[in-house]
Length: 425
Image (cartoon, rainbow, N blue to C red; front, top):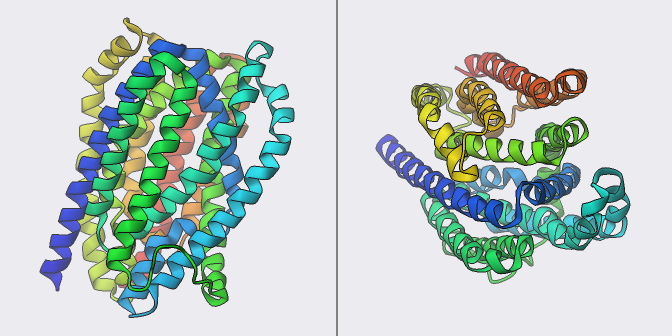
């Protein structure tokens, strides 16, 4: 059993890492095309609108973010895993469709307060597309691909995501030069639709009774997922709010160009970080299935820590030559503000990476108080430190707040979840 577990984890980790690397390449190629065709301000505009849509996801109590954990536990205990997938998907569709209608009705009033008058008409016309992408399709595709992790086939999830990213890149290369940011939005719609239908097809092969459409509604499952969802959403609220808060503060004190530069810098650093995050994601269902075996949990944690510590150093070293090259590729020259953003974010995330195994252990074992606390600390740091420093020093002051919050949150997760795991041994 131990050899099977190790083999499965290694396979899933390798494919997940490959997914992240290919996603990085395709994403930045696509971003380069978008930047060249529409400019930094419209990139910042789209980024700000997607960030606004993500705020609404703070209302999600369906437990969708923990579907991999529920599926893994159900299969481990020989319970009906299909009822978890069906109930979570149906509740997710119902919630986000309602929120989508609310935001469509009220979104234009919010745009007037935050968007430059010269770009306001364009922002209003893009609003429905941005909401469909950020508020409906992205959460649903994330939910279903998470379910694939729950059946222990993160390798198949990785292949699906790789294909969807390559299709997205192809659509961007063909259509963005002709239709601008609109083509970008529709390319994302196509990408997410492919992931949704592809994930469902994969899940039907591994979960008995799933069928062609979600039809099994279970009040018992809903109560269980909502109880878990209350915890995971408290965690997600602070996590999701951090990015929009940063962008709104940057827009207020440094303008849309600063938002676009931050988005480009964050995309590079988060893409490199996503390699280890994706490789570690299969830990969530594994911790969930091992929840009664403290010794095996400890072994799994130790091995994963060794891997992520090595990656943290590789990430820092690799960014030294990558960052200037990235700036030249995007702008044709060295942009010092972009390099400053990358340096601040990469240093903070290199420390933060060490906390990832502890973080995923908390998610898998349903012990998330310190995960929640870490995200609250980061959001609070951005608000309480970022606003006054941003008012005085511009984007540089806001980056200081992000760095302090990122490092402080990692320290909180390691010590808090570490104490919990030691009590289980």
